[in-house]
Structure formats: C-alpha cells, structure tokens
Length: 157
Image (tube, rainbow, N blue to C red):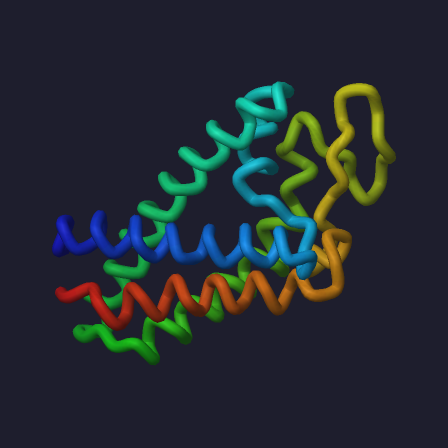
C-alpha cells in the first residue's frame, strides 16, 4: 500500500468532503454537522465538540482512505470512476446504516424511539438523515462521491 498517497490524498479528500458538507450547511441545504455530532460523543461543550469532532472526522477519513486503497489494490487499478462508484457506495452506507444507528451509541442524541432528555438533546438523523433536511441525502452523496473521486483520480498503487 502506498502510505504516503493514502495520507496525502486521504487528507485532501476528507478536506473536500468536509468543505462541501460545511458549505451545504452554511447555505441552508442541510442542518447536519458531522464534526459536531462526532465531537458531542466526547464532550457536552459545544465549542470543544466542533474541534474534537473535526479531528475525529479527519481520522475517520484516513481510515476510509486506507479502506479505499485496499479495494484499489484488490481491483488492481485506480480510476476516477471506480473511486466515484466507491464514494457512492460509501455515502449510501452512511445514510442507510451508520447514521440511523448512531443514536444507539451516542450519549447525547435522542433516538427515534425515545425523545429528548436533559442529556440527550441532539436530534437523531433518521433514515437517510432526512431529519436534517430533505436535501441532506443529496448533499451527503455528492460529498462522498467527491471523496471517492479524489482518491480514485490521484491515489496511485
């Protein structure tokens, strides 16, 4: 595995994904703030949560870049279209599996079954993260497609 490439392109791909998601939030296309959601797993301090969550988000991005690199190695090649397809699969997994189960592991997030409490104040994402806006699935898929595109286009075996 090309570790330098994984780190370089993984950080850049994660930076692009994060920038797209933050821009979409700032422009009102979604209310989902992934670094904030991740950070509030570790702290109730909202300011610290954004910093901690951003670090966790970039670590996750590096982990996924390694996973993509392993798939590229298994396929025996890299390409922008293969990376983009993997990004679509990744985004679908996040929306359909990961985000809906997050309330079960998140100490400060209400669930679809139990309402808010004094410690569980964050709204659950729900299926396809639709609780954060009807455009959230499209934004999430586009950002993950871009993540995969960057890795497929620039990472070399």
